[in-house]
Length: 106
Image (cartoon, rainbow, N blue to C red; front, side):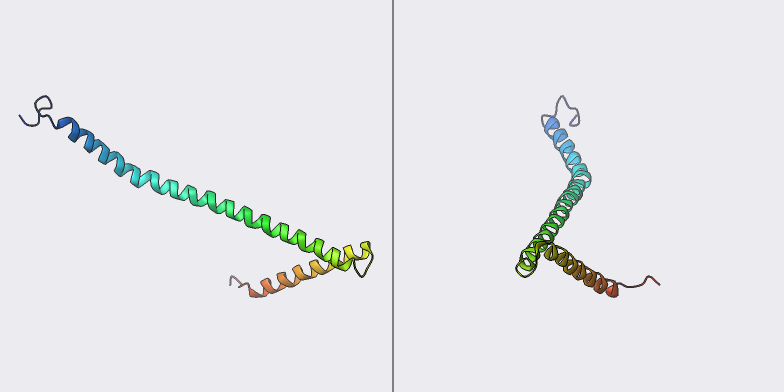
């Protein structure tokens, strides 16, 4: 009887190979895509948080640089409110340009 496990010396290795193939198949279909999706979400969120941090630091640096630049000609108080007015105007212009580019959902 070739299918009898007690007389077939290759039965154990074939059984282990079959189980290994089934486990590898299930892992390839379930675990690998899940790991890829989670990695994408984690690294994507880290990149977004990093980009937001860089933008905020650049805006703060620009405001401070504008304070220092306007401090040359005006008093400190006038330079502060003038720099806020200039940066606010720049953001308003950027916002208006972006609003013109949007498409209505009609």
